[in-house]
Image 1 (cartoon, rainbow, N blue to C red):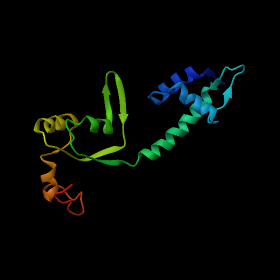
Image 2: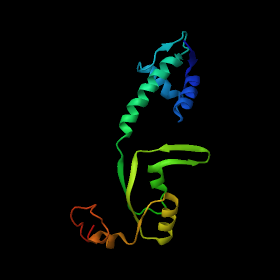
Image 3: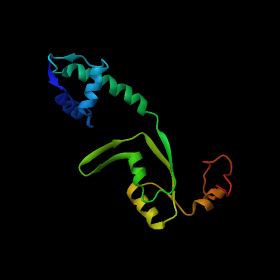
Image 4: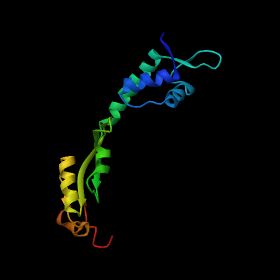
Length: 152
């Protein structure tokens, strides 16, 4: 048995999962019986072996969930900051962000400079132009089963 404090457990879990795990996350696991509480006189300790077993089973469940991607259509995309957040798999200010299970399927913006920046940074095509004109069936590529009309 390798008993550690809640704070030490959160640091270990953050390292193990390669993402931030707060002490409150560990306290939750203890409170709801996901990992066993050890210690006396108000001192809560957890066994790293129990924690590892929990997170390994959690990772397997999470992998099954991540197999299905969500499709994203980006209107008024600008330079793609929001889309980058959906996509993930980047580093900013020393923090690494994991790949997310979102797939950008279509993007649009009216500003040519923003479209160029979007394409350069996200390595993804974008339809550059007025969304009102695009929705008149010139560029919808079958995303809409019937015309949306000119009045939105």
